[in-house]
Length: 172
Image (cartoon, rainbow, N blue to C red):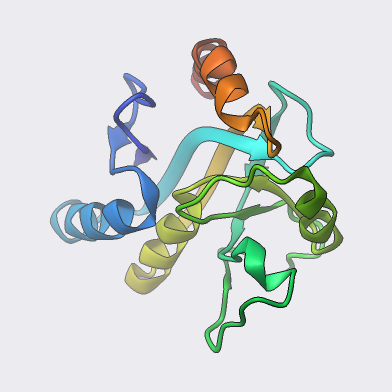
């Protein structure tokens, strides 16, 4: 089953499950209980912490849930904050999820040092729900912006073209 966030980010071949981690968790749980999919493929846009370029398409099976304050010593977590549908994540591109968009480009180096290259608000929740149901899952992302002070403006400027490119990639 192919899924996407929804609202301004919908595809004709994907079921929308919500924007942000909470909406995805609730809606995808209901969907998995009703439909019992064998595989989940999340498609969507992402911000780059610096290495991936605008309109790069990246596949991933691993997500993290790290808040920016973790890198500045302002927070910690007692829970596991990485989820993957593969055993060896050493060569995986990790996607970080938060309900907030990073606009401080100096934080990118901290994420990239952990092999986290992209930011998407939903993906961690997708993989956690899939894991809880024993469903294989993955994601395909297209970069719309860098995680910097222009993140929102660049996202809006590039979203339409990015979604067209991602649609073509998925449909081929």
